[in-house]
Length: 462
Ligand code: ARG
Image (cartoon, rainbow, N blue to C red):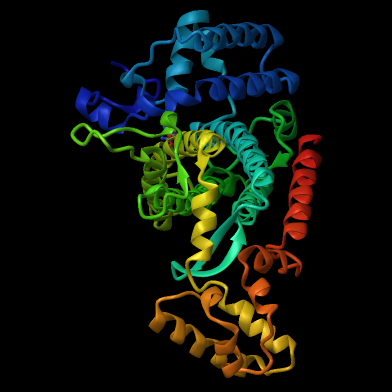
């Protein structure tokens, strides 16, 4: 079949070669953006007197009709026309006749594809920002219900100090807040127009790049035409921000999976977000959490894939850059899916408060309280650490916990110990006393919840 660019060719490629080069199987996702970009372009061509208004009107009407069909899923794409841009151009010419061939005046597929990607990511990143916000809201709600639910806090996956469960949940709120910031910040760079850069050098037609930028809702234009068509930073940045977000979700998944195990039993996933085993009737697996953890790997892969594609491509456009798309589409789908699943998972999970609380009483995670107790009475902290370390050792030998050790033993270790140590050893007291800024004390946590809520409502009003 004769190509739209076939003038200087004497024979056509075989179908399997076309297939290898085509991007239409995946870039058809850009159909709406592609048509919107073309409508802005042709409008500008009319306004600048490059095309007669009659032609512009016919082309616009044709494009609008294609857009309508695209929304209804009625367009049939063909590998013979390589990509979304040529497919649409061909359909336009079929629809309105040879005048459709005027659309591509003063434009190249190179600035066209870049424009499509900018428009696409702008839409998707906004959607992702909203979904992050939704998840943050769910976290706040869960946190509010669990300010005074105690859970062991871990370092090295060893019980360290008891904390409020809400405090733990809010740690993720703040990670997500940074993710939201990063995505929002990236919109500044996504929202720049490459359109009008041509193949790489600009065009001899008296186009108005600012007009097309404005029509498409961009905040400005790429300053340099070569950069405009060569740049894929905005996609790499998107993949990087997505990787960071997925890393956060994946860490949370790892905790949910651990906490769902028989060994922990801190939480139970709702039936809607778990699955059974085909052989073991007793099983309830936290599949969704495992899947998100697993998909994180593929998102990192997409980031590294594109970084690697770009590292050796000379300016300006190279066909290598067609490889920017699949990883991006895949990441968009994964991130959106993961955020939605996560919100559902957290909102519906059952928190076994008693099990968590019981866990804080069956370990030595209150040892710091004793050391602090002595330090507050004037003993250098290093010395206090040593004294308590020896008490822990005595308990381990006796097979008891610090709260079970009689005062006489404490007195032997230091005269500074009084009856009130038993109160200090209580995990509830231990948590509540950590009133330093950003700490796990209940008042602090309640304030943190208020702050988090304010942040979300302030941004919602935007
Ligand atoms: N399908 C191409 C891509 O996705 C569009 C740009 C093609 N430009 C060209 N000069 N071959 O990158």
